[in-house]
Length: 228
Image (tube, rainbow, N blue to C red; front, side, top):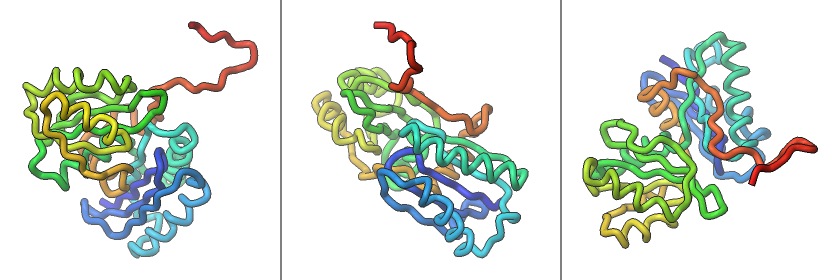
């Protein structure tokens, strides 16, 4: 199966073309903004480098969040439009699951991965996934200070050999080590498209590629009230 995989949800723009799990072409660029302008030319290049026409694609995989509001929309809108035009399925996966996929693939001794993204305000987006693919902690928004207790609560069942990934890794690593946990930092900070494809295939979402917003937008309609 020929798959185009995409990510623009966090601090990178990434695209890859895979055939039956083998990467034919890929690009990955770190960027905080400009995803909308960068994505289409990047996709054209990886398709050209893969030697495929768009009509040869059979599926699209894309990150659905958590991430920046604009970044999520860029990748999802592109994937959906292309999927409609080609009449092929679009499958979603979270940014956290995609990073966990890479962390566990590269750190083969780890029994599970803790993946985080800095959500500011002393909060992080958090997920934990076992090496066997089990979701131990579903993607959620949580205070940084609460992470050690959450991890300790499942460590007895899942073992203490864990690997960290994501932009929140540096924040939680010392907290976990204070609790006596051996937490190796993989250095992975952004999803790569090849692992977006692998993650979407491993855990297909029944709702397809719907955006995942773990924090409500700050912007409100004029006249709306904020409940304190």
